[in-house]
Image (cartoon, rainbow over all chains, first blue to last red):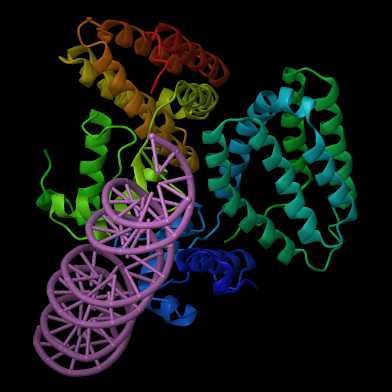
Length: 219
Length: 219
DNA sequence: GTCAACCAAACGGTATACACTATGGAATTC
DNA sequence: GAATTCCATAGTGTATACCGTTTGGTTGAC
């Protein structure tokens, strides 16, 4: 766990800590995040906590009521579909835009795939998977797109975290499939024109959606 | 101009006022928005100003330096292209998702078009144009998409505002073209399947881009 | 004249205090 | 017993104060 001294500001510390709690499920969905309570608990004042709550709202991990109270986001199946349809639209675009860059310099993707192949836990695979996609978005050179991706990342993490907890008993080992699929994408970037990369990415994300265990239907 | 008493909170007041200033060009791009100075000027404390600055950063109207200072966003031609390519991707999606809803209930679009036809200033046309597009995104039923749109809206406004100022002398009257184009879209929603609406929206946005006067190449 | 060290003013980060509002349960009324 | 009023509590909105850091200019050495 990161300590306060590791971070440049208490706002970041609070944001980081609350994010972990929410994603890990330690903070129950729908529960109130009262500024005073959180502040006392983290050993900081209300000001950094307020800023953390605003930042987490932007990331889709916290929701504000009309009266200004902050609650841990409750997930509905519809939310997941919204997220999925946006990925299905934005990521193929990113792949097309990024194709020339990645063709010229695929090193970061290669490194990511090697790391994924060595990953020992499901959680690591998940994070490396998301990182793989983020590398592509980064390479698209569109800063706005990167911003949008980051604003979706938290909620995506929330979903995947819950999924893993629900299927704890089962293996759910996606490492080899992930590596194979990503190698296919990399090969595409290396040899195919942007429009093909775009299509390939769309297929990849569709495949991911279909592969996922059935999404829970209750919050 | 909105007064403090018209708004529920001083944060909103500050956000609103600063947004207007930035979009209108009253605040020079690149200029420092120092918390104390702004606070004194608006007659509020630093706290609401801080929150306003964070909100405006999310909207792409303000940028923070690494040391935490807030500056009025400087526009580059690349920024505009980034925005454009995202619209070109997200709005056709919205049109497809919204098609069934709008077919069943096109009233809001009709009302918007009528208002546009009566608009007396270029600024009104611009805002009604953006509202037209927002109605469609709203009708898509995808809350995340709406959030993304709103986060792009400020910067879009900034661009269009600058454009109008630069071409003040020229007519640049887009009212009739806008009405015609929007009527075409409405007709499409009323009679065509979602995939056709999607394509039509893509064409519409491409046409808008091509029609725009040459975007300025310097900040 | 140039460069570096230094210093005061400006600014952001955070804590704390106070004012106002919402919330939920207890008391009251019917 | 059910609905309503009332009130204490909890919570947010905002102001202010303090502290450390950045910044930009000035002074001094060379």
